[in-house]
Length: 282
Image (tube, rainbow, N blue to C red; front, top):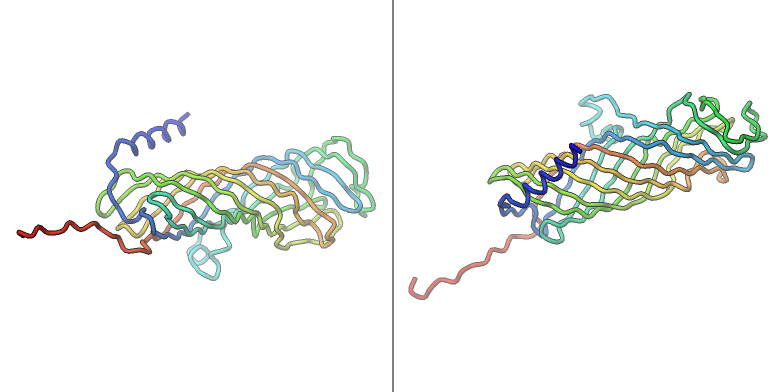
């Protein structure tokens, strides 16, 4: 209810406030930003299949993994890709309408020792988990499964966004943006399943769609700070889990993402202002 009221206020305000003219959002403008995110995931069903097993785990809970802040980690070019980050570049192909491409580098960590329900079978695994399961309770212990997309849950996507300029003046301006996107998931999945060796490689696993709203504060026309809220759906039907290429997993879930970004924006084309011809008598 509070979020609905806030969004309603933003739309009403943006419609009644005189929008200052600015080349920052005109056709031909380009921008780039870098930022960091916190992510939250819905429980999901994960299906594991291989030559000697085929089973599902239900209502599996996972969290993100935010790196503790330090200037050397977050601002050092050699290590700044370790935390959960967002990078994006965009272009205004029409006034106040942009297309952008970016990477949302999230991290997905399945909680250990959580209760779940298992359905399916496992045999010849050289573990105590061999058997046939019919929707039976199970605790996901670490000797059974370790499952993380920690380097990371990489959502490579394209977005279309609309800019609505709000309050502002010569040196400061606030802007509301909204839109949506679609992209592919290229996770680096860290998995240890049953008695198999640890697997941790990049693999194109699926796709995602998302919606986004953001509030952008522009300073001196060229620089901005931006807060974003995203909600999306991720479907990964082809996750690699072991060194054996026949071993796969699949899952789908919803996510929320909250970002703080810092960027720069400038025009790639010169502004053409109409010139009024002088009167012959002038």
